Structures are given as structure tokens and as C-alpha cells.
Image 1: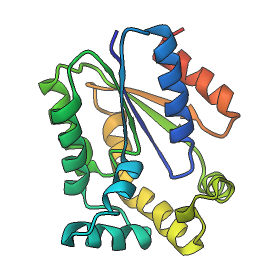
Image 2 (image 1 turned 180 degrees about the vertical axis):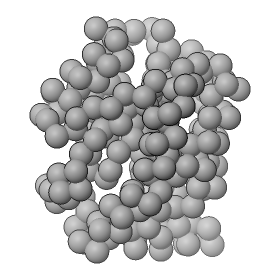
Image 3 (image 1 turned 180 degrees about the horizontal axis):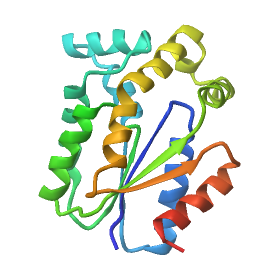
Length: 197
């Protein structure tokens, strides 16, 4: 019954909204099973508040709208797995992996923890749709158009190869969902795709 779900897509595609809806749904459907939620953007925003040479560099990358190096992302979710994973929870990823290297590293972790046939939910939206959503969201790191442009550009360069990897990998359930709908309709399509009705 434990679900392992990866939300992937452009910045502004609605990954945070839909992962939140899924967590609430799973809580109601399986009240005895907790959910481990791994939202990489939030982890990075918290870590870069620290004062150290590593996080100073990461902060500069974040401010410029760049993608954090894969090794840092792998370190973050590896530490979360080691410290928090018991084997009795759902796992919901939001905003990772962001590169092919990271996707492949994550593929070495799932068998180790006995997580078979994880689901990858690709929220497919156009660049124009994503830009509009980001402006409407109004978060501090969404307000600078140059930063947003860089984030949307690294999606094409780095995230798309990870999506293609999942699309053709028999160890995953690859579920493509049209993200350019109302949040509720997107979520209904997600539940149907996951066969959780």
C-alpha cells in the first residue's frame, strides 16, 4: 500500500499544489501510514540560510536562478532517507530529481529500500503557462524575470533528460498529466493514473 511518487515538471507546473493534495488524499485513504514528503526547493532554501563555504556557494547559485549541483541534492535526500525512512511510509518527492545523474542515483536507492515500481508524475505544461503561474505565485525567487528565465532554461537542459529516462525505464510507472487544467482536474487525473480511486 505504500506509495512512492515523484512529481517532476517545470517550475510553476503545480508540483507543490499537487503533492500537497496527494498527501492529504493518502492521509484520508491510509490513515495508519505516514508520508515522508521531500520538497527539495524548501530544503535548499533552508540550508542556504546557514553560514558556511558550501552554503555560501549554494546561496549564490540560488540567487542567480541556477540549478544546484547534483551531488548536493543527492546528499540532501540521502540524509533524509538515512535519518527518517522506516519502510512504513509513503514517499512523495517534489522538485527532484533535476538531472539525469540524480535520477540514476535515486534509482540505486529505491531497490535498497525495497521501493518497487515508483510512480513518476510528469506535470506537462508549456513554458508560457509556467511563467504565468510563477508570476501569480509571487514568491520572492519568482519576481526577478532573469532568475525565472534561468530556472526555466535549466529545465530544458537538465530536467528533460531525467524525464526521458523515466519515460523509457521499465522500473517506473511513468504517468504524464496535462498540468494546464484546474488544480482539481489535474488532481483527479493523478488519482486516476495512480489507480487510487
